[in-house]
Image (cartoon, rainbow, N blue to C red):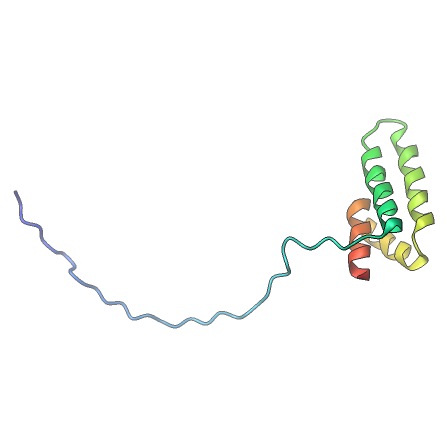
Length: 103
């Protein structure tokens, strides 16, 4: 049997202190705001408006009806913000973002 040899018995490496910039991540997962009855009704129509786009032919008409109901239930300020958010987000997320900013 061969004797065990130590090639590098001990290597000391100096520890270098590295400082990284401090940053904070937003809370994840984000808390869903408490919604009152009016806001829940708006969210229901937003979900249905998003889902109705899946239905061929008549889905656009159904989506338009739900969108009109959303406009009717929202205040003018909420609706303006909703329209801006809805350009890049689906109706459900746009409405939720409007209500989250409001709280």
